[in-house]
Length: 231
Image (cartoon, rainbow, N blue to C red; front, side):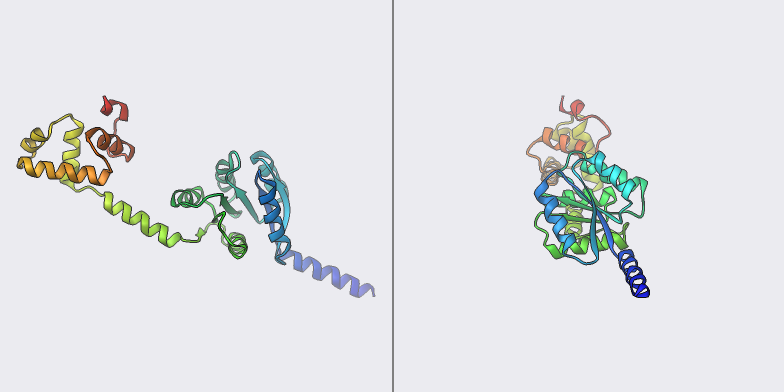
């Protein structure tokens, strides 16, 4: 009888060692409850802590030493929490959850060092898969639609790429040159200069010179403040 009890305890400890220990960080009780239920209903996942603030989550992660933390980034300072945790622990699985999905948020999660990214439309299976992935591959990023998002970003980059001539025209516009002056400076016809300017406006999504120059500043194409060009 004693042998059986000891064996049972040993098996329980072995089973527990294979369980992914999770801390849930989020301000919304309903979302936290739903995540907790997912963990409860999944044999290899277990919630070991919940926090409704970034500071509380930071303390729980370092006190409880979970395998994975799921962060609802609608929580105040949620993104900062994710960055702090990654900077301090390379092995911690970090799952980012946002209430809306977009390529910008997906890439923000990637740049933050998260292990996985989810949005509110994620299925239970996707949540479980993200937590499991984060537990075994903390520094390998996973997200639904990642390949498509990368393709869209590459297409946008290609579309916005300026040729050397277009960059030259942009610089001249930034210097305050008129289109006829641009044409004379680069030794092309006025019609050709207008074509270059029109292409610039199209690529930069601008309707006029001021918008084009402001967008160029935002994109880092000028090493000057936007205010100086706007004036």
